[in-house]
Length: 261
Ligand code: KIV
Image (cartoon, rainbow, N blue to C red):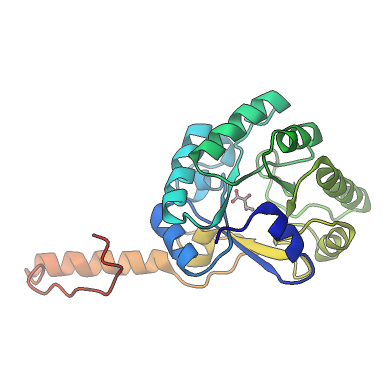
């Protein structure tokens, strides 16, 4: 059954939390079938699915569309909806935006940076919030690791604590030194979910397209478990060859599936 925010908090220190992003119904269906307890519909959708150069091009309407698709594919999985750039610029704007994403199917909302007034406003309105610090792509000038200097590390630690105290139930730590992530994880009551933040977080998240190898660029801290982009090329070439040789459709082989079509 679908896990709620407090159940993820209760997992801290007991069992690592596995999170993956998803943007489409069939991928969400596969993640739910695999037993993934929490799916992030991230604004990475803009870069890995929509071809934009930045997550800043993603709109609330884009997020509603993708959250709706993921919800239909994974009705029993906790779904986090990401607030796009500027849609959380002040508490009231953020609440209106968050309500749209919840209506589209999200169970909780993620936002980038130490916007403590926004986080506490959403929490008071009954919306569970996931924080995000370290590298925050909506405002970052590059994708380089952050938190290497003592001053930056202190800023990120302070932000993490402030985000927790404002009411977030979970915190994504992106591309920071492993020791800093370990220190933050030890200092917080809420679970940390790392991406490029080392092994000592309470859980890990990967962008599903990176894990699938669906694309042509992958961040150095991601892991490709397969190379689906190459599979697509191979299938397209095989199909073209069979059409041209008149083998298809006489040689159709039915694959085992769910029989949903
Ligand atoms: O938008 C996203 O997918 C994210 C992950 C990289 C954590 O924020």
